[in-house]
Length: 82
Image (tube, rainbow, N blue to C red):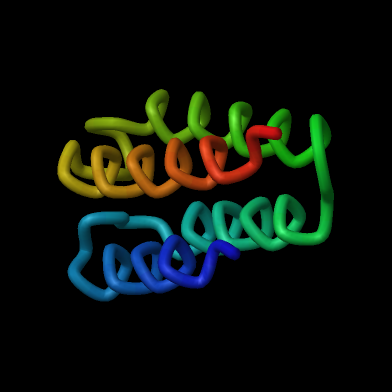
């Protein structure tokens, strides 16, 4: 499910669009948790992660990284709809 999102996190970190490896690791763990969940739980994890990423814009993430990752997460939420 979130393989492309996980790849985007790794790429953003390597390009220094995310400047904190701990932040990138946290995002990866939450994407993996969403992958292991289903239904409303999955949507809730992804929605919370989207909000967390938006809050990091200009702090530990560039606006480009935020836009890419939020788009990834929105796509995952949409795929989870019944």
